[in-house]
Image (tube, rainbow, N blue to C red; front, top):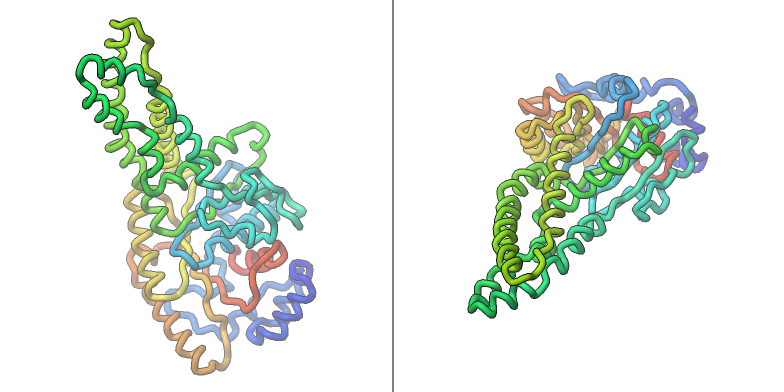
Length: 388
């Protein structure tokens, strides 16, 4: 019953302040069919009560699946991701929800501290649900540390003695540490995702059948998708150059009775490139991965979502669903402000209907509520409204 999902104070507040929300939705187990009594759906756009999200499809089977929620900043990705994770868990799927957004808000959403870098059981759940926030800075620190002290002064001293000191200084400019101090955009989140992929492969985490990612805003996602190609074209050349230099300096050192140079930095960089390729493969795996776009009903947000979908399609990332969040609830009467706001939202929904890419996606409409969605009871409430 919804009364069990919502604390009594929140239920009373919703009942008193949300005249558009039927009492039956708050205090009974009946399906919220009355929720759309006064709705004015756009032609071709399904109403909230219809089962268009395909949640049964999302819960089918016990094979592990990854769901990545992304979109423009400020559209409610975290709330949607957290509510999806809660819904999966309550439907019998042991679930992990992970935030890879540097500006974390998953802790705020669940109203508990998830910033320790380890899996934390979510409070208030009777089903297995664990969450964590990944610190990307910690993730890439391992590569910074690996690049330090990888080459001693032996080569430089040797080349100085041969009158090649200037060349040695130029070669020093290729130190890997400097590259990792200013990593390419998207690297932070890619490392975080790759670490989670390795993390959940362990036997003790084999029970988890659903992994939900709360990703960074659109720009980060697009840079992440292009990262493996960047690593292949740019960093790959640096690796080859370092290996050639290593061979040359190794021969010189051997001639003068010195040991060969260390290759830790190049090895770590090669490992990084391989991990990024695995991340790209995960994004493109149609059997186990789905990217869900989250947007709000504004012209700017829908336009950005359209560009995101085009980029995801170009990279062969499977996308099936589009969440339109913060829709004004149905109302028999509107104030002037609400009427104008609703008109703008209808225009945005029309854009979705007319967009050749977005219109093929399963549309999930999430209503705007006047209470903060925070904590498991509120997330259950939200999940039962939008994940059907």
